[in-house]
Each structure stands twice: as C-alpha cells, then as structure tokens.
Amino acid sequence: MAVTMNDVARAAGVSLKTVSNVLNDYEFIRPATKQRVQDAIAELGYEANLTARSLRSGKTSMLGLVLSDLSAPYYAELASRLMKAASRHGYRVLVEQSGAEASVELSALHGTFRQLTDGLLFTPLVLDADAIAARAGTKPLVMLGEHIMDPRFDLVTMKNEEAAAALTTHLLQAGRRRIAVIGAHPGESAGTAGLRMNGYRKALDQAGVPFDAGLVAPAEWRRDTGAAAVAGLMASGVQFDAVFGLNDVLALGAMHELLIKGVNVPADVAVAGFDDIDEARFASPSLTTVSPGMDEIAERSITLLLDRIGGRETSGQGVHMESGFELKIRESAP
Image 1 (tube, rainbow, N blue to C red):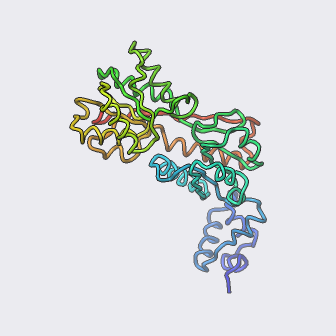
Image 2: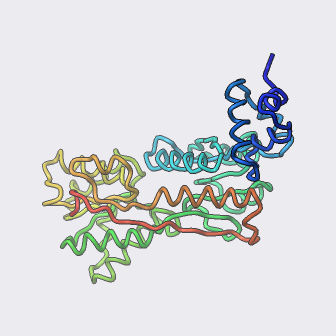
Image 3: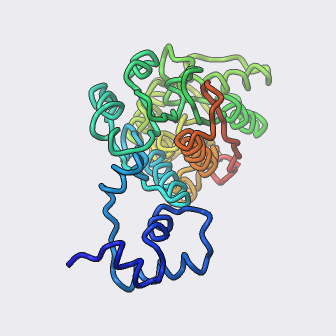
C-alpha cells in the first residue's frame, strides 16, 4: 500500500493540514514541528503526488529554460548556474534546446512545455518581440540575452558594450594597435555581436586609433570558425598584433590556429575573448577574457521570475537588469 499524507500525520502526531503546510514550504511552522514531519516522511518513505498538488495549487514548482544549443559552453555553464539558483529557491528547471528554430521557440511559449512550468526563462534567436507578445500567454516570462530588448518584457543581460570597450582598451594600453575582431555579424547593431562591436569601436575612437574594416572577420561563434577566420586574415596578408574573439570559443579557436602556424601568443599576437567559460582558465596559454557575471545573471533571472510568479513584482512594465563584469587578465594578453 502506498504511504499517504494521513500516515505521515499520524506518525508525526500532527494534523493533515500541518503535513500539507510542510510539503508546501509554508513559512509559519515551528522548526520542531517541521522536523517531526520531515522525519516521518523519511521513515515512511512518503512520496508526494506532484500532479495532484499541482492541480490543487495551480503551481508546478518547475521553471522552463529555453536556450539555443547546450553544446555551446556559455549556454551550458549558464544553464548550470540557473538550475542551482532555482534549486536554492525550491524550484527545478526543465530545459529545451531550440536549435534557433522558430517552431521550437513557439512551442516553448504555448505548448506542453509551457504548461508544465510556472514561468519561463527565454533566449529567443528567431522570433521577434511582436510574435512573442502575441503568444506568451499569462504566465511570467523573463528574457535572457540581447536578441529582444523590448519594454514589454523583463530582461536580464550583461554590459556587452561597456565590457567590450574595456577589453579593447586593455589591448590598446598594452601597445596593440592592429586588433582584429572575429565573430562579427554584418549589419547587426543591437544583438550581442553588434553591441560588442560597438564597444570595440568606441574604445578605438577614444584612443584615436582609426577603425579598419579589413580587421573585422565575420564568423559563426564556434571554435572551428574562429580558427578559419584567423587563417583567412593571415592568408590575405592583413597585419594584426591582437585578436579579439567576440566570445571565448572563437578566441580559443583563433589561438589554436595561431599557435600551430608558429605565431607566438602573446609576444607576436595577443588573444582575448568574452564570457570566461571554464575552458578559458585552462587553455595554454590561459585566455584573457571578460567575466560577464554569470552567477549574478542566474540569481537575478531566477529572483525576478519568482517575484513575477508570486506577484511581488507588479510594476506593470518590463524590468531590465544588467550584470556587472570583470576583466580576467591572463597569459594570452597580459
């Protein structure tokens, strides 16, 4: 026979309502009473019927997270931090990979995935703001990243422009004047790549260094494309004394290509990235990069979403938050 809440109540010597309050983390319970109930649950092996509880409360204690690709180190590390932050608040996270496909992003907004969760952390790459607003429904939604920066939505992001400018300034102050940039997205000004390019150009302007479009190499954000972009610059005869990869995997791919071509990093060419993924610390040489405050992004995102779920954030308009950043100066660009 399955153990019931009544069995737990009898074993703990409390009412059925008290057991329910403990299971639902009701805060006004004496610690000793809560401990008796928890001991009885453990001793009897009681397992809550989450489906029934969800039907009664209207809450699942689950959050949804939609990212484009968990094989990308930044997304994988961010997902891990978000899950830990959610766990500290008593929530679990369901993760969906969109693959930058509109159909998956739409499904996450109004399909079964959405029904299973109390709120959604969303990193859209395809849908625009109007499409999301038309299908987002009534459950809370917090945007991550820079693809959608619309006052209708809550947003947690990083200081892309300021951080990129700070990193470029570091390279300039180290005496680098021909700083190649890999990973640009032509025509983009508001997205992540566009904002980081804006920061790069502002730092050049402030230092009086002319912008040279020949130093900019468009590329998708992967290691192999970072390597290919640097190989293309070298093959074309472009002279450069530093490489700024708009994310770490681009920079790591570029550094690998330089090293196998016999280029000394950093003596001949300094290399820097953005994101401070774990691999950056253990590369050889270790990678100079921007730490965008992933732990802060995770905690702010979860807290904001839970405030919306609990009705504690009721300003009626989107809340926009930016994390702080820190330059991590390492061997590749001291």
